[in-house]
Image (cartoon, rainbow, N blue to C red; front, side):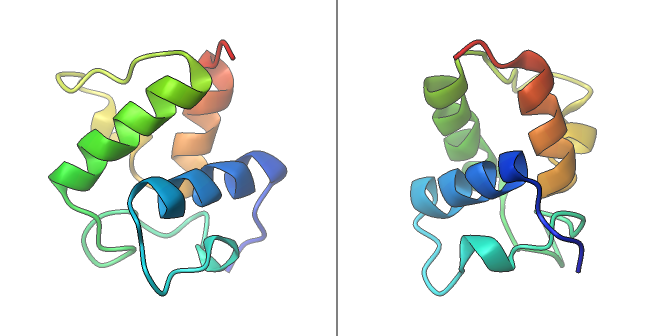
Amino acid sequence: MSTQTPAETELAELLVESLNLEGVNAADIDPEAPLFGDGLGLDSIDALELALAISKRYGFQLRSDSDENRRIFGSLRALAEHVQANRTA
């Protein structure tokens, strides 16, 4: 497992908090593991809730119709990089 950067740790904590992931420790999320399917096991509803939480905290919208979503939500690391590049707050 790779070590989380500070931005990844912050986002992992938001992810666990906003999705009420019981039994998941934010620090234990592998930043390179998939968020969906075999990885963390998130689903499309989780993606919508996470996008809303990101919008509230970081001040930008993740569009549900974006062709980039599969890449953006591919892993904690990919999501953190996207957030860092687009955040306004």
